[in-house]
Image 1 (cartoon, one colour):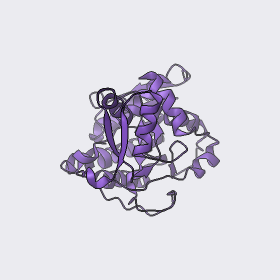
Image 2 (cartoon, rainbow, N blue to C red):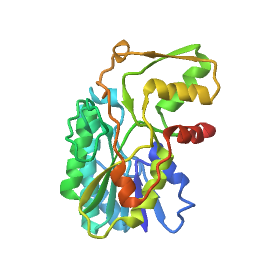
Image 3 (cartoon, rainbow, N blue to C red):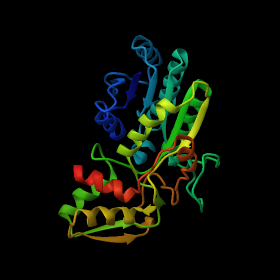
Image 4 (cartoon, helix red, strand yellow):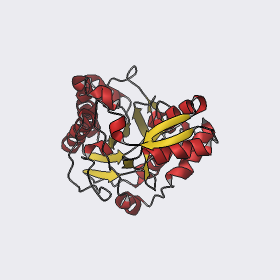
Length: 284
């Protein structure tokens, strides 16, 4: 199968690159904005057609949550228009689209894990743009899976794990919020699960939405404490309230995802986030 991976220099794209040899029965086309600008509809269509793409894993996104608030046009262009262009190109050649979305499509004020059927209500520009992208995929793709994930981390790119690790090496104390709760997700686990899911997707399918994250729940404080503890760093991690760290974009205080559907439909096993954190930290 010819598989196109957009945004392949990011966390998930890099983890998919690592799996290329393991899945040598497929031919991968790894692109980032220099090789393929998904905001250009004509070039996207041409690329998909000329390379006879059979599946697209769309990792391309504007993910700087705070920066998105002052860059609304660019955020929407990449996350919504880009998703539309990819979806239309996939529909033209009947390719499968795996589109990556986020827990930020939810308001984040729930009291139990969000299911795929819960009402979306994003409170940030980033969340709204990703929800718009989901809608574009729903209306334009023929065969697609939308995977909503959360708190992505990896040994690649910029993320919470690498930030905390670097700071903890140089500082005696870190203050981290404890009133935001979610599911850390190792990009390596997501990448592998995507490759396991692709051959299982029926030929006759419209667009389905699935939640994906590692098992287990954590606050950012819990997550940071685990990083420092596993790396045996002398830094003290202190829990604080979100109001002590005001940000441009309001973070959801509860965005835990219910993964029952994806586990049942595709038979995948999700490791606990702490187990996967150990794997990730061993690479850093």
